[in-house]
Length: 121
Image (cartoon, rainbow, N blue to C red; front, top):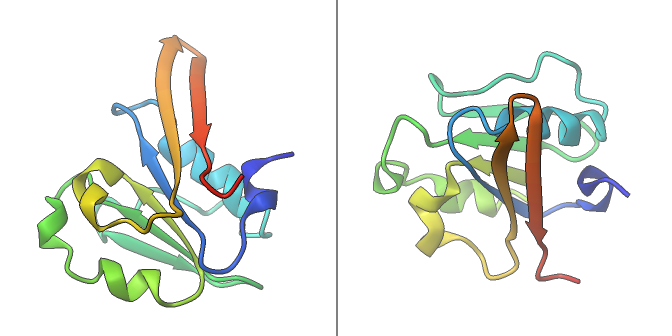
């Protein structure tokens, strides 16, 4: 079963991995599980993209800032949608205990290794 199908309101997914490891691509796949179109892209220049749907999705990308420069994190965590955070290591100390952590590694030119740590299971 895909990660997207296991997510529900209030879930937080923290993504870790170097540039180009597939964080945004994985988020696109999760969003497809919720019928969000192919227009999902990295919010690097706007920080957060909100995708409406049966469950709202908040796609946060902290690549260009430090975590303490994003004071609104807790607000997004309380909205009841699904929160997907790229470069989550920048806010590690502010993530909820039940955060699902996804570690992506480049294993070859077109090959990625993915480790999912889900404290809910």
